[in-house]
Image 1: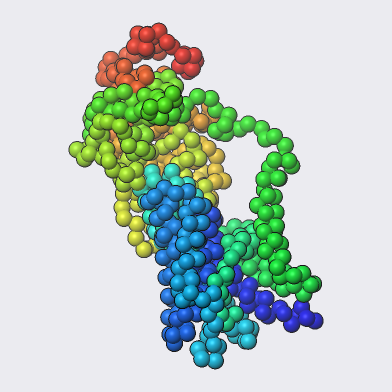
Image 2: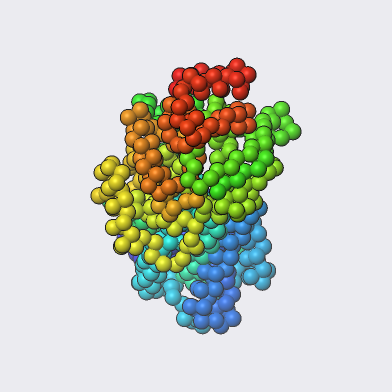
Length: 309
Length: 263
């Protein structure tokens, strides 16, 4: 009974994290970059939203500002990687650390800024889960449609090809570095937008918001894709799957809390879930497949050539 | 057309692994030249093509394409002038994207990508016709992911992509070496057709001496980062594999490697 009572809240929060997971999907799956900026940019989105709301800004402005703040963080990571040659995973970690200071600055040195749900008109709040679910549903749907259209444009196609095959992309005059910066900007923009929703929903922005967000995002992606790839392996179905993965994650999360697990240990649980999903393809390949026969087209089976020192 | 002057490149300079890959290359291609490049492993053939394509910058020397100095131009920007097919069939196409999407990206090589529809309807009609000329049954699979195709099919598509937007120079880096014995001659024949139909200036690396003689109007042989043999016109038409081997033995001071004899 308590579980059913907790369900709407889990769905609402799951939709927020599902939206964030769409952002992670763009970097991790489309661009093929494991972008750790995310942990910081969720918080940046939350901080920007809370502080602007406290100053009396309308909620739509707060959400848009959060998006652009996140996009800027993505640009920083992108430039660290492309212009300064820092490996992408380290570039993300560096930006994430920078964002901790930035977020504290935004919060005015405090570790928490509360949002008064009576003073501001919010899009989502935990006091009204049904309304939150509808609002998030609209946001998620709009994001998926916008991205779906975007990836059919000339620029969108070059973003896809950059992640899929950078050598081919460069040979076809695609500016791979630009694509990566743009992709990371969009990705972190969406992540920060989700962060702004999170702050509204919880009624506060906390300096520790978003810690482990990348892991939650990856968990949502793996859970979602394990189902959606079996239905139809295309972009829209994958994104819907990812959002579904976020919801499933939060339903499981609330269920585990109801079972009495201390919330302190939930991050351990998330990390284990992701580790298992990451390990399964490797384990399958390494221990459960027979040696494949060499195919004439297999590049490993070929002798000679390729003399670049 | 292509003018390479005193091109030099050493990998890992100043270390025990230092290797002079290009040792002062001078090469001048005329419009419409189809040049085959042979040489043993480590002779610098791929390094030369990569230098032209801009994979890295040379230590010394200049590369001009149609009078434009491209030596310092980044790879993606000089791609405007170049069609490239790689040795590895997996390298020239994006596996998770549709055939039509791959072709559409190639059709926009050298143009500024905009915020408009990436594959237009009339393009699909054009791609269908072009794919039909490959005679690989791909014309009805425009929406298939390229990753589902065989190496030979992918290499044929890469060839189409390299020439879709007419390049000033076509660079073929042993593009049939990784294909099975049945597919390789087909792709090579296709190459000949496309090059002749579009009158493309072409540089083709091959390991196969017979192919090097049978195709193109000029043949160059590389050894230790230098061009040691350069034959064109009637002289090339009359060339035999034995003569070529002799030329190589002279040029390299007797070191013929097995691989060249076997192919």
